[in-house]
Length: 188
Ligand SMILES: C[S@@+](CC[C@H](N)C(=O)[O-])C[C@H]1O[C@@H](n2cnc3c(N)ncnc32)[C@H](O)[C@@H]1O
Image (cartoon, rainbow, N blue to C red; front, side, top):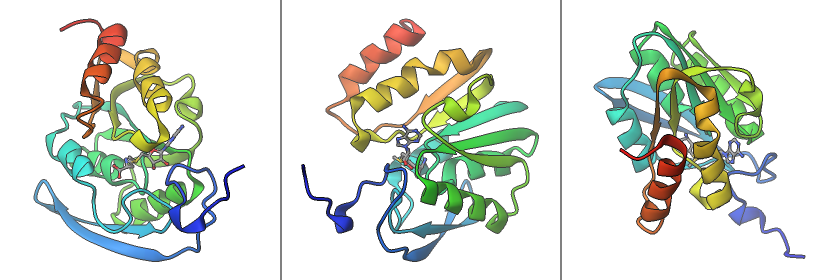
């Protein structure tokens, strides 16, 4: 069995064991100021990830309805979506309990009342729910089966006109993800 190295703990574990070290990120997104409480043991704790920023800056939000931020981390994507369209109700889901705690704190820090955070694995916390939009900056480090499941299970949770918007930086995965998208959403 491999010995656990507490300093290199993965951000997608359910219960981070690393010592809690808090930080704060101040940033502008679509011209609006946000602050995010972050911590050791979660994704991109020191600065907003470039993929997160690209997703937020380019996401197309529905006029109303429900939005899912799957793998929300400390909550930047879901909080931005809820802020930019107060008519939406945003559900943010993450498997990492520290990320879930941070995302809840960040709702308050950013005065967001039209969003909630649920802890759990993939779509489990929203089992019977349909969304008008699903947003994801997926946990690439968790491996292809997790990312594939986020894509493959999405259609079951989407209304007829819903959109699924994902950002992935990996050049290596580009081709494989295209195939997975085509298998689950059809060819464009
Ligand atoms: C790349 S990070 C993105 C976090 C956040 N959306 C952002 O852009 O800053 C992916 C997130 O997915 C979460 N995650 C990993 N596996 C998961 C699973 N099976 N179910 C739910 N969330 C998961 C991780 O804990 C992590 O917070």
